[in-house]
Amino acid sequence: MDRQRISRLAHAHHPIAAPLTDESVALLLERATAGAADGRALDLGCGEGAWLVRALAARPRWRAVGVDLDAAALTRAREAATALGVVRRIGLHHVDARQFSSVEPFDLVLCVGATHAFGGLLPTLAAAREHLAPGGRVLVGEGFWEREPSRAALDGLGGAARDDYADLATTTDRVLADGWTPVSGYVSSRQEWDDYEFAWTGALAEWALEHPDDPDAAAAREAADRHRREWLHGYRGEFGFVTYLLRRD
Image 1 (cartoon, rainbow, N blue to C red):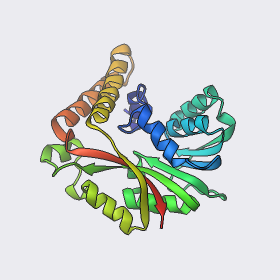
Image 2 (image 1 turned 45 degrees about the horizontal axis):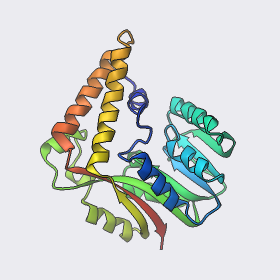
Image 3 (image 1 turned 45 degrees about the vertical axis):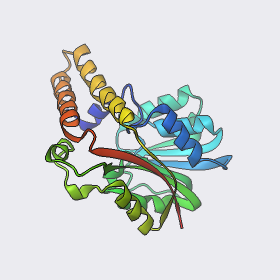
Image 4 (image 1 turned 135 degrees about the vertical axis):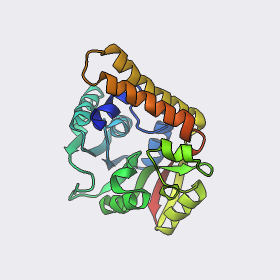
């Protein structure tokens, strides 16, 4: 089953592709756009555009650009922007985020839950810097080890290596050493993680139950069951998620 379709179905009830509640997202966006009545935002790996459409709804003089490889997700992003009346202020591009270029820089660059597209946190920040206006901000979300990961946790994260992530202190130190200053940040709670994972696996499993004749039904159910098992018997309580709001020194 196509990975992009799995993601779309799994996020049906939790459009933010990260363990964050609606309230946490609103708070992060408020901090990210604070003090700027107008501006330009770019989401590298925007999916269905959940971050951008919410930002535009709250900031009527902002404009935004979203970039993603999933054409169906971009269609949903356009539909969501239309429903909220912000479609004229958003541009959506079906292109690899690593290859996207723009003449004008952006006041806010986002990449939350999609740093794998660039090969990790620091490469993501390097890409974001290329698009950032002077004085601009970056909102980036990344995983970290809450404690020394077990073999089950590593296996549950797709065969991750211990060095793929660090603890929160080391992750923050690396960001600082790379020339960025965290001006705000948010660590997702255990409740946010659990809600996200139950929403992810539940939406996918429910779709399979409701569409038994679909050629992808069995694969969807298997993916939901496997993901639930990897979470509950693997990385739950060992893998955390932090969202940084960063500025350059």
